[in-house]
Amino acid sequence: MDSIISKGSNELYAYANKNNLDISGSVFSIVTKTTTGAMARTLGLPIKKPHFAKDTFIKSKVMPERKVLKGVHYGPYDNINCSWEKLNTEMELLNPKLLYYPLTIYIVNKKSDKDPLTWETQLLLPYK
Image (cartoon, rainbow, N blue to C red):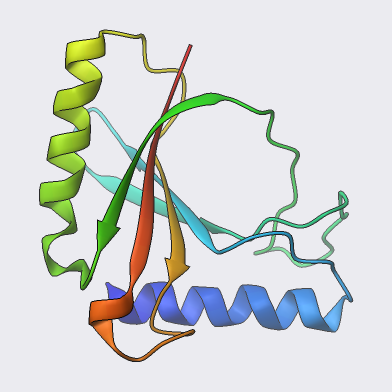
């Protein structure tokens, strides 16, 4: 999974550089699950201004601000599911209605630092 995220991140950064886009944050991913349990992952890169993408694999859209329950996972990704489980447990205790798909933001990752012990990942659960 790390290699897929790394490859996708590199493609997004290359696209942003090629098109002179102002990057305003770290790479993030949105994971959606179907009723059958299948998962799809979308990678994103925040930019300062809307951009009409001519590339068929690159999409640009404006995301509204949302309230989120935020957790932070430090270290390698092999046990990130434990962090997600803890965050989901906290969300159940608060009992807000989930509004959108969970977001993962890679603050410090393999691209910025090769040492997995320095990696920082924000886990976000948007709600109403």
